[in-house]
Image 1 (cartoon, rainbow over the protein chains, first blue to last red):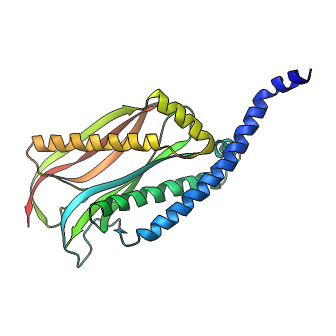
Image 2 (cartoon, rainbow over the protein chains, first blue to last red; image 1 turned 180 degrees about the horizontal axis):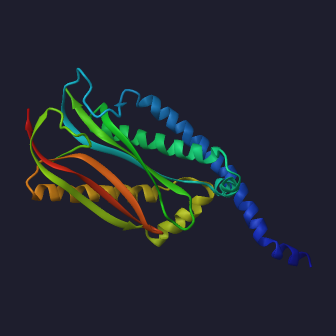
Image 3 (tube, each protein chain N blue to C red; image 1 turned 60 degrees about the vertical axis):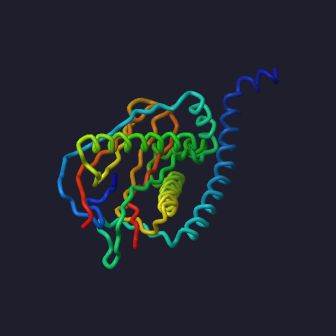
Length: 153
Length: 106
């Protein structure tokens, strides 16, 4: 009779386990990602990214090369679960805000890394694009940053 | 071939406009990656396999675009834009388009 109870409520236990796993590991990964983002942002401070379309006054630029940085980032089980409730009650959902912020900062960092790899420290005309990736009911988003890396004399 | 998302080519002069060129590719992720991504959806974080897939697809779209530009005698593509569209679950079209021009050093 006892095993019957556990079997009948198995779905509920699996759901609970996934929620706890998603919350715990998801939080840990997010914190680590933020640490890595902050460290690399410091290190890449000398690479300048602007979204202006023209070469800044006083800069002599000769070459121009398209550079881009992209990242596909996924929500965790807990956030996806809570998002379901949010969609019903409305309001601000902090979990997805941080998800998108992480993706956007990561994309910009990769753009700067790509520029640096080409020996450039100035990127102009930077644009962001984001797309949701259609999949098996997964909540994941791709953020792309692209711009023109200049060879400054 | 100079590829840029600016309307002008720094240090160069545009001598002729040759019209819009584009390149696109439709990519689907394979089942193995999809299953792994499914696990990743429990704990969240970056889906590295998808990031690579999108980067490869975008590189291919740019390559096809520059091939088209070369075929009509251009030596630069300016004002490049990217568009991504999810066609069905698990497949995406990546399009790159821009203006083919000929340039010479100013």
